[in-house]
Length: 58
Image 1: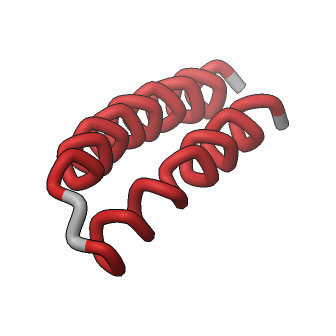
Image 2: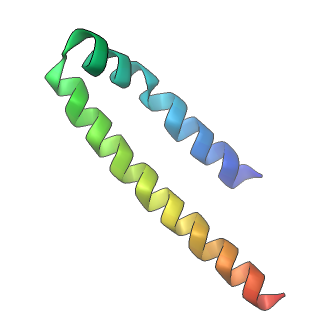
């Protein structure tokens, strides 16, 4: 379950920047949101690959 925790923590870490960007219009926070979303995408792809590998082994 540590991968799920990694995913949850990554999403939770972005919460403040989402609020700053969408509620306050902070453009720098928007950049951090975009970077964080790219990191989430990469993490999701890693998890998908792991799941597929485990599924195929087993």
